Amino acid sequence: MTRSNKLSASVLASALVLTVITSGCGSDDKKSEGTTNPAASAGSSPAAKAPVTIKMFNRVNAGIILENNPVVTQAEKLANVKLSIEAPPINNYTDKLKVMMASGELPDLIYNWGGADASMETWAQNGLLLPLDDKISKYPNLMKNITKEMWDSVKSVNDGKIYMIPKTNIVNHWGYMVNQVWLDKLGLKAPETLDELTNVLRAFTKNDPDGNGKADTYGISQVGVWAPSNFIANAFDLPLTNGVKDTDGNYKIKEKMSGYIPYLTYLKQLYSEKIMDPEFIINKSYVDLEKLNQSKVGIIPSHQYGVMADLGRDKDADKKFTFQAPLKNSKGEARSLVTVATWGGWMISKNSKNADEVLRFLDWGNTPEANALFQIGLKDLTYDSYDPSSKALVRSTEQTTKVNTLTSTYMTLANAINGEGAIIENADSPEKLAKFKEQWAAAQKKMTTVNVPAVRSPKLLNLGNTIPDLIKEKDEQEQKYITGEITVEQLKSFLEKKWYPATADAEKEYIEFMNKLGK
Image 1 (cartoon, rainbow, N blue to C red):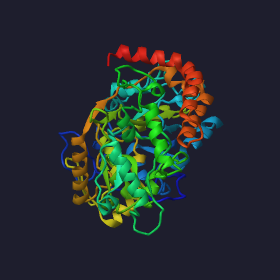
Image 2 (tube, rainbow, N blue to C red):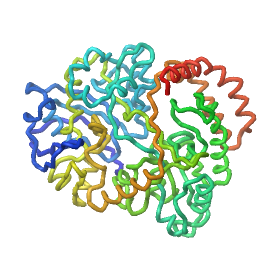
Image 3 (cartoon, rainbow, N blue to C red):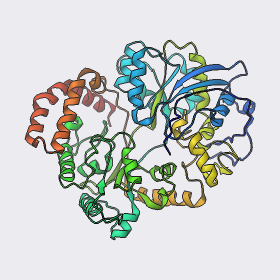
Image 4 (cartoon, rainbow, N blue to C red):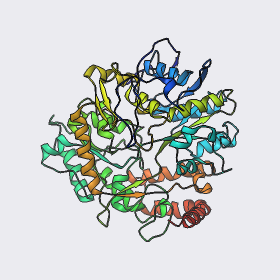
């Protein structure tokens, strides 16, 4: 995915009529390579009438050009809408979103990457968002594709109402992506334990894996202390999501988990040895991936689709990198903690005059037709052939270049239908698809999947609103410990004197919530 300055544009419909494939993800889907008649897609296309303009604020990956975009034009045609899309770059989308929400000048449809987070709660409490409970049952595709667990996961912890339409997602299993070329050159294998990881990181840093004769590489990078380091944290039995018990069988806040201090101490070791990217603390979204592609680091956290998804940025990603399972914990398990499969969600401005039209648009977005359009694009323009049963997709090099400027999984209104995507992103040849399946099958054999329930514990989830300054201070304390500016005793003192007392009520409520679930 190359960067572009053309990420924000008002998109107007044209008279262009293009073909789009109708695909599905269930076992009853049939192979189809023909055109789709919108009128024949029962329940997917709104009744013909004058299209309403929907103003939309979305998080779209770099490289997508929205102006005169034929995929968007086709979406407008099929959904019978006009779209005016503003899409700030991914790296500062959240900041731009907060500024826009604070301005009071809101579009109709707003994407919140963080899902039903503290920001959403604040916006709902401030009367900026439309409650949707009395409306969603009218839209069959929303009710069919979005599960009860997904709806429960976005209910406000303050008033129990729904202010967000979950963006359904494929299930991501987090492990890591590694430069396989470096491993092979140095005669190493992908690490499965903490000791093996440490040895690989030292080799990637000190043994000139890129062969340029310079000491200019690091073993690993990530985005911040916690995002998303599941693959390392698992080695310390430290779950980075609420809803998982500690090693003693009890629920606790993360900072009281047995693996919390050991995990931070390990990062401190990597930092002091200078075998970890020293900028990891300040890295923004996807900066770690950029450094991997630039051969500055050898490992980053990733899910199973990461290598293929990276082909949009590096056309040789499938030749350079492999996906690997999380590290083993004290029981020898490479745990994959799987939460409710959503990818943020869609909010509707309370002042929108087009709420029903927006909901109809989202209802269409939760159909195989919409999912295929946004994930695959347009036949002959962005692909040659597609088989929904096997997810086999064939594109030319020119079509691959084209699709990366027109659409992606970031453009989807729902990124999964019945839990599956239309394609394996960028696996646009039999060889790439086979490579993905081979790596994923190998990683699955090593993984133990743990399904984690959605936690809706108001006080815990509202800490971002109730103690924002203390959260910032805790983050700073963790960072200072890793960089050697404070001792572990000073970190523990902060936790005991400030953090634990301030979060005691939230922890108590959380524990009671989980015990009631009986998980």
